[in-house]
Length: 407
Image (cartoon, rainbow, N blue to C red; front, side, top):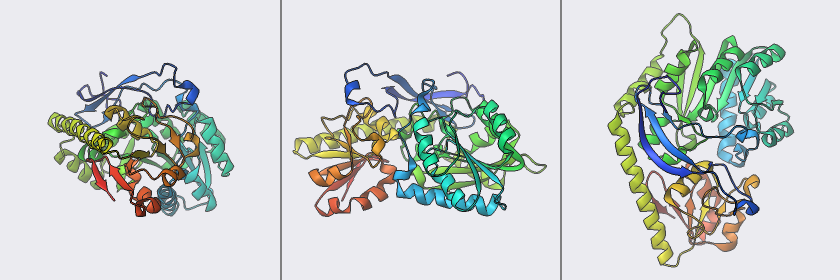
């Protein structure tokens, strides 16, 4: 990479070379296991001017036409999106006629809450299989990749949007400029752009290297939002810090007015990012060392359990989990299987390491001694869900921010 995809600075530092990885959501059918599996370098860079963590955009064209992640399998995400719908309705949607557009709407969970309250909605998502799930909820979906040209067409047909939302999508975008340009074309003059993404500061502070994969081409700081959106006449007027996905940002932006271009809340968080060293090379050198040590500790822990004759399974066939498994070299010789609540993944195998993915019920049927909570960002929900397993003596391994056993 030669320049930052957010602010165009050329002060990029390669700080975390993770090796060659398959695409993190490239789950395989059994008859694909003996076929060549594409792998790409997973090299993480950081812009020392705005703090944007980024990898080269290696996702092939059309990749998101069929997708396997859906938020509806998580109770936490139901509560999260219901709360977001309440925030949007209360603050920015005074009239039922006000339009909300969700870019990357996935299975329509967020928009369904707005629809239930009588608000006008429209989803945009390129995944054909996922768009059908959204339509089954009664959500109208444009089944296309979002572009500036599509934004013009949608505005012509549906009118301007009072709210444009994109949750856990913005950091999937390889070329941010045309995406953000399209958002400005959708927004009403007084419209609000709401973005949710994992927080780069949490990634660095808590060793969350597994959030880096080819689909997550960017991990954003508040400063990177302010710098990028400002280039398109948008100002960040509020930011919330959220616990979801291991720590996320919810950014609110609107067309720039006559007042200050950086809100007090945004500046406060940029000051925190500065104190954390997110614009300093030394911070990322230390981060790389911690990640390498984490890998050693986790591999050593699992090897010790294997020597003791203990059985171990995994929970969470997540994309971020596949970064963890491939970086640490954890395969079926260590994990008998990985369970997941998402039926779209059952019967498939994890990319790279080829561990079978099965329903959650398999844990109670086989009662392995330990469960590696690969989807550690949902650990509280998972451990509560598996109370019967725990009562029978099962124990859990949480890999991040450092490997530890809980019961």
